[in-house]
Amino acid sequence: MPAWLQQVFDWLDAPQPAASAPTPAPRSRRIAPTAPPGAGVFSHPEASREVLLGGVRVAYRLQRARRRTIGFTVGPDGLAVRAPGWVTLAAVDAALQEKAAWILRKLGEASARQRRQADARIVWADGATLPYLGEALTLRLDPSQQRRGMLAAPDGGRPVLYLGLAHAAQGAQIRDAAQAWFKHQARAHFTARLAHFAPLLGVQWRSLRLSSAQTRWGSARADGSIALNWRLLHYRPAIIDYVVAHELSHLRVMDHSPRFWDTVAEVVPDYGRLRQQLREQPAPPWE
Image 1 (cartoon, rainbow, N blue to C red):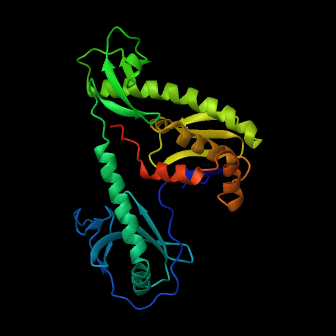
Image 2 (cartoon, rainbow, N blue to C red):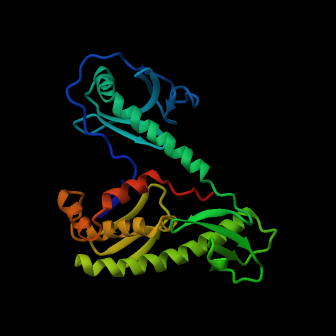
């Protein structure tokens, strides 16, 4: 985590609070750090230990850290455990067993999220579809169009983005042209929404930077600089508004305390529902 003065809007599952005093439990066993993928039902690529949780084999990464408690994080790679250097492996085992239900639930959610992302993968060719402001957008290659792209909705139907590329253009060319158009639209859309919400919250933002982060949708600094992920443009406007309001609220409250969420609710009362939708609807990977 960077040490800069910034409140990071991190949409991965936050580390689970420390487990209570451990009770004896079956020990996990050490596995080679180079164990092949699939060594367990859930396997972290940097796994160093393996445990049986509710009949499910979980290979996880164990990291010793300068902290007072045992913490768990479930992300795209799987389960990672951070424990103080003085905590025994038996205590780690007991904590894992105590939190088994939570761990398995989060691993299942992460796996389902990855499957949805794979299903949403974009095939970069003429006629490809991708979400834009919550709607399906069709890509069409038309050498006669300007290279930045032109958006149209023939007969009021599904929106079409015409890219000024040859019909024989390579996938990477199509992706890059579409990305340039998305970024241009994202800056205009985000700027308008920042201008809308800032006075409602009584804050002033200084600058906007487009982010390409894989796991964060936005961030804010105390000096008023805002970063927003351009891929937010895949989502419907209400979800984008939530993220914009979230980051602007950090200019008033630089943490995630109850006072912060009360601030968000001033302008986006249903932020909880929108936040959950953002977590459950992964944006397609741009590859």
